[in-house]
Image (tube, rainbow, N blue to C red; front, side, top):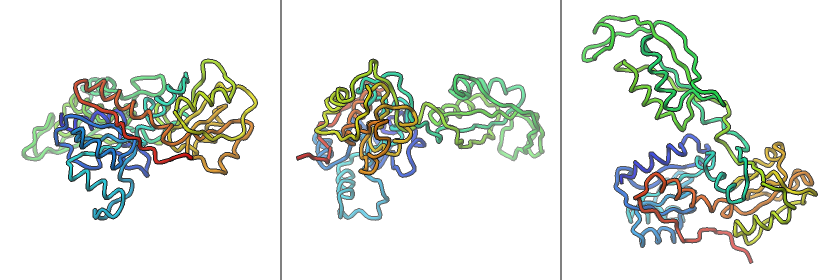
Amino acid sequence: MILKQLISFLEEFAPLSMQESYDNAGLLTGNAEHEIKSALITLDVTDEVLDEAIAGGHKLIIAHHPLIFKGLKKLTGSNFVENLVIKAIKNDIAIYAIHTNLDNMYQGVNAKLGEKLNLKNLQILQPGGSGLKKLVVYCPLDYADTVRDKMFEAGAGSIGHYENCSYNTTGQGTFRANAGTHPFVGTIGKTHIEKEIKIETVVSSLNLSKVINAMLSAHPYEEVAYDIFSMENRQGNTGAGMIGELEKEKPLLEYLKEVKKTLNAQAIKFNQAIQRPVKKVAFCGGSGSFLIHQAYRAGADLFITSDIKYHDFFEHQGAMTIVDAGHFETEQFTKELLYEIIKENFTNFALQISETPTNPVKFL
C-alpha cells in the first residue's frame, strides 16, 4: 500500500492536533507517496532497531517516541540522532512517530495500560481542551437541513450525551460570480443577495476532515464559505492519564507486587503506603508527575506513572501512594496497541513488533 494511506488512518485515530506543543509526532523521514509492504513497530528508534528493520526488509518503522525532537540544522553524523536519520535515509526507511497524540486518546496508550493493570470503569484523568473545533458554514435556506444532517451523520454536533447540536441564524449573503465560474444562483458579473442560514456546530478533531468532506458533498455552492475555530472547552474522551477501579479492593503491597509482575519491572519506587486497601487507581504511561494533584483530587488511592522527582514523593503522603514504575515499563504495551489497531484495519498488511529491547535504564 501507499504510505500515506496508513498515515491517514493513524492520524484519524490519533490526530496530530492532539499532540502536546513540545512534541514532534508524524512522518519524520521518508516519502508518503512511496509504497510500503510491511512495518516494524517499536517504542524507540535505535541503531539496533534500524538493523532489525533492514534485516527484515521493512521500509517503515512506526515508533511511539519521535527520533527527532528538536530541529536538525545539519546532518553530519555528529550525534546519536543525526547518525540514525542518515542511516534511515540511506536505507530508504520511513520513520513515523505517534506519541502524545496517542497518549491523549481515550483508546490510546493509557487504555491499554489500564487493561493490563486489570482496571475497570476507565475515565480520562485530566480531560483535554484542544480537541474541539467549532465549524461554521453558510448555505441557502432550502439546503440547510441536508447540509446539517450530513454533518451530523459524519460525527458533528455531539455535546456530552446530546447529539445533533447546532445553532442556526438566518441572514443575507452577498457574492458576485466572475468569468469562468458556474454559480448555483445569481448571474455572472452581478452582485447577488441570497437568503442563507448560518449553521454553527461543534466537531472533534478526530472527525473534522470527515465532517468537512460531508458538508462539502451536500452543499450546492461551487465555492463554500466556512470557518473553523479552535475551542478551549474540555472534552471527556481525550486528555492526559486515566483513572479506574479494581473489581475488588486489595491490600496495597499485594497489588504493587501484581503491578511489578505485570510490567516486568526490575524494581518500582513508591512513597508512604496508605493504611487502607486499594480500590481506585490513577495512572499515566510515561512521564506523568504533572498529574499527581489531579489524581489526588480524583480520589485515587494509588497513582502509577514514571519519572517522579525526589520532592514529588513528599506529596499527599498517607492519603495517596505515588508509584514510579518506569518509563519504558508503563509504555511498553503501546507496541501491542499499535499492532492491534493497524491489523484490524489492514488485515493483509505485514506487521512485526520489534524484538529489540530499547529500555536504556539498567539496574545493578
